[in-house]
Image (cartoon, rainbow, N blue to C red; front, top):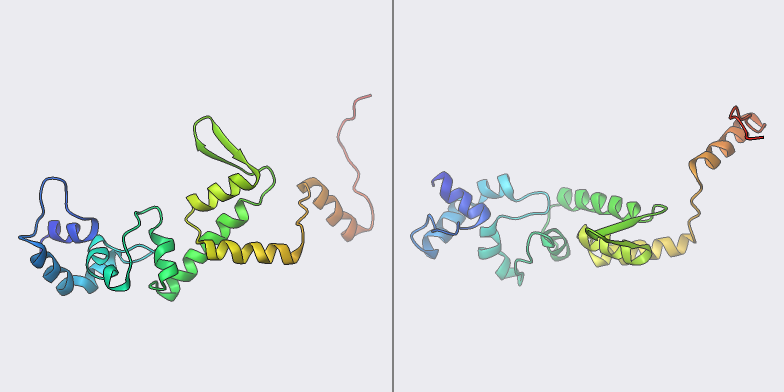
Length: 175
């Protein structure tokens, strides 16, 4: 197999021409080199284009585009445990991030979203599966509302807890 053929199995044919004689040739090359190609590019919640052509249809999957590939593979249960765990950690970070105070989402220049709409847009952009969003929403609702304190206030509380006294401010005050 040539490097161009391997690249085509990974990314798809270029716009000018295929490096295979026909689809049967491409299919044969995929199955004879599948393990190596999957080792190189079948990771991080992504699959080579040839996988989408030759294996996904057997599972009833269609290529959703690179934006939603990871969540489709996660939902289909075809990811390794390591891939699944890594994606869930990444998505959990995206989830936590959108609940920070003053969070906003910029969809395009000049269009900024706040509140729930910003969170929804951010989670769609991050390709977080709806199943996880609902799970984490349920967890959040069970825990009750989260009160976010400014860092200065939480530092003061910690100082009082450690010393038993209010910290003294050395800032200049306006008269």
